[in-house]
Length: 302
Image (tube, rainbow, N blue to C red):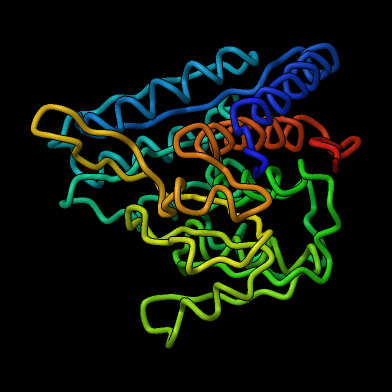
């Protein structure tokens, strides 16, 4: 029977550590972290995600500044708002909820967020810092989902060095930074994608398999070797019938569960970790911006 990597439990552990860290910041600097959440339009899924992130932030003691804009908001107006948030001393992290309306250039907007307030870790400067750092510096602004995946792996308490890791997907949000994080753990990393020849045989050699392609239940037992560890990043809504639907990952869970040594479920795996790591980045920014004293040392390695 495989070990289920409980993202809710691990995320709560991180949030409990953040609560203590925020109390320390409050005691030393007489302030708490501030997170600005910007949503444009009323996409239902985005509203759900924003609500979850806002709730989690308030639970750990982070002030939330909510900016919900109309669907018709002009790109220049959105950039002006971000400029104001960049200058606001009470704001330590800025989150622009994606997707944005098609009339707005997402890359242009995200690049307007100053790197030290980049709560998602997407700014080119933060991506570059991650790329050239010699190790997974806990003081970096790291993309939330990949870092959440790494924390789930660390929770297993195993030495990752030398493990053969395969990342399915090469997106800027998950695939590329995930590969970087695994490299810094001294894994041997392969990234596969839509143009890769014979993906199945490559995946079957993986000690650690990260599935991040956005295709429901794409990976089955023929893709994984006995005893592999699987982190399922996918969140896909599929219809059960005309009235009901359910969330599934990129991995056919029921097919691989008894073949692998550990696997993250969907939902309840990577999702809660992504939110917790967003709070982590905001707290780190607050610490860095308050005064440069001891680096954050959380979360500790398992």
